Amino acid sequence: MGEWWRDAVFYAIYVRSFDDSDGDGVGDLPGIRRRLPYLRELGVDAVWLTPFYPSPGADHGYDVADYVDVDPLFGTLSDFDDLIVEAHALGLRVIVDIVPNHTSSAHPWFAGDRSRYVTVPAGNGLPNNWPSTWGGPAWTLDEERGEYYLHLFAPEQPDLDWHEVQVRADFDEILRFWLDRGVDGFRIDVAHGLVKNAALANEPEPIPAARFSSDWRTAIDQPEVHDIYRDWRELADSYEGDRVLVGEVTFSDQKRIAPYLRPDELQLAFNFSLMFQPWEAEAMRTSIDESLVALPIVTWVVESHDVTRIVTRFGPRAARAASLLLLALPGPVFLYQGQELGLEEVDLPDELRQDPIFFRTRGERKGRDGCRIPLPWTRDLPERSWLPLPAGWSDLSVEAQLEDAASTLALYRAALRQRPGGEFRWVESPDGTLVFARGGTLCAVNLAADDLPLPDGELLIASDAIVDRLPRETAAWVRLRG
Ligand code: BGC
Ligand code: MG
Image 1 (spheres, rainbow, N blue to C red):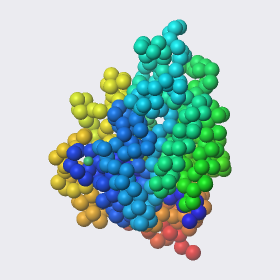
Image 2 (image 1 turned 90 degrees about the vertical axis):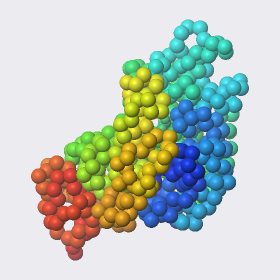
Image 3 (image 1 turned 45 degrees about the horizontal axis):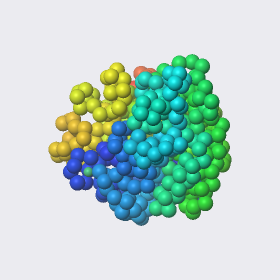
Image 4 (image 1 turned 45 degrees about the vertical axis):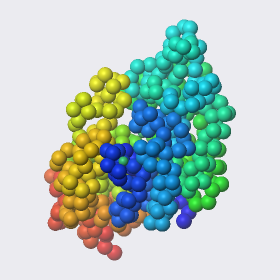
């Protein structure tokens, strides 16, 4: 099928926290494999696996020590192969995460001559004013070697130098390795960041660390990065089966994403703008409009392994309504594991925290562990898990929700079976509400109005038990008559 990704629903699997098949407290590939029927029943089209490569785990896998193998913690290459075969047999596609901006400091390349990395001889202090996304300067002095090396993230994640042809050749091989094993594409980590300003020129304004590189002016988003994606696209297109490249291109100005989506570059790039909107009609409407105007195709997402869950951001009722909003928008959607269970952000005690953000900011930013708690599959919660599950999650478990027709899981399953298609068009509606049409179906969302009369037609689905009016924090899809 051509361009299957155009309106696909992807499901993000944070491998460590999805399903632990061997009871060591950490999710693994066989765990994912045995849950493929669950994902198929849920109704998603594809899964994205976060990094499962050998890694010391300084950033839970986003510090890769070997790009062409599986960390024994998660399984083996043959587990991976089985997973792909079984997913495909069930009609599910699989994309994997590729982390080309940086390696782990434990990668053999970094132990070698470091010609693949961005380094500067020590001498006159810090090479420039670039900050690490997680606090402190983006440079670490290696005293033994007498040089600074660059890391936009943690010091254990040295940045590769994409001006080096060897790096490009290496990654061509890496992409081929996984394409040959049957992956349906890649999610590209920090896709706008690979190529650094060749002169290592200062940023004109200080970058707020918490902004996750979205407002860099000088350091990244260099014209040469597009050559890489033109090459990668050619490579992906040389394989049969419409392999997809999805970029993590993070800018607060959506217009800066558009060049990455030119016809010979990436097919998709995340649109994070909805992630940063409050539960307010005007803010959401503006974000949706700006995205639709700025980009040829918008990849919608409200949750990920990097941000606070929507139940906590919006409240549980609003989060259910938000799911109907999200799934009615035109284009591909990414769901994050547990979103379909209505899991909330967990406030962990500091001594259990694991995210490097917590440590690098000396606790000032709590980090992302709260959205990375392992999924509750059964009412009996696991005894061992790398982050503890709250006792209350027994009732939120897949087992419990499958027995409850009013559960969030039931809502997602029903919505995914009848996502509307067709042309997108706003319909006038009172303040505090959002109403739009997709072809002959209306999506009505009441964010903050007292109530919203339901349009005339067949009620397809509602985020809560409703009759003919939508109270605050509810949403519905209605098929128009005629
Ligand atoms: C990933 C994060 C990771 C960072 C550094 C992000 O885009 O989603 O989880 O920490 O890249 O690799
Ligand atoms: Mg395990």
